[in-house]
Length: 230
Ligand code: NI
Ligand code: MN
Image (cartoon, rainbow, N blue to C red; front, top):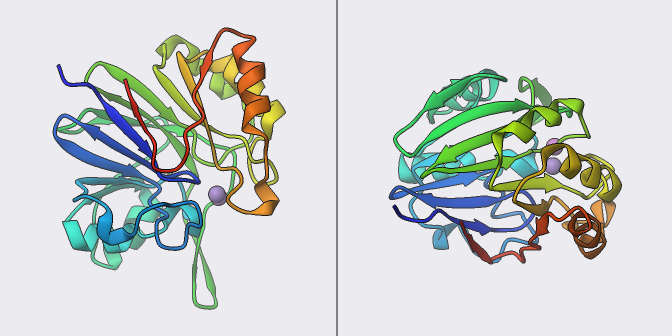
């Protein structure tokens, strides 16, 4: 069995290599000040997972879908919008799971907003979500943008291998709440995301790491461009 490889590309962007497929979560590449690669350097993508409609998450989804013929997995509303622009999609919704050729995906609740700005118009983009991804015998949770929620307690029994949690505050959990979220989820490894991209989401990842390691949970602070193999 091959290992599963994860590359953090800054902000909330996660590239997953598993079962011969390339999956990217929230591909905010071109406008992402933390992303170390250009869109041209991104390998051919098979699936794009989008947590919600905000531009720092939907990012370059349309371009990647068109370039690579990648299937977009997201909520129904975002998929409808992207389909109307010519993308190939697989619509899902909170609580629903589906088995793809690389593994399964379940949409998890996220407390946040979700809209798409198109010119002067703000379009409704369904409920924001996180993703529970199961592939190659490994379980990964990408929380998306969210505040702390008691729903996260349900993830404890999943025995997650890795949890990617936002810590930047203001729009999402801050360090303190992300520590509480980690205590709910109890993953093997936790990786902080969605911080220091801009001043408004400044956070101290080292403080987060120190506190979660007091709970005997390993925290891996990934620099953009770094890989994690599980
Ligand atoms: Ni957002
Ligand atoms: Mn965001």
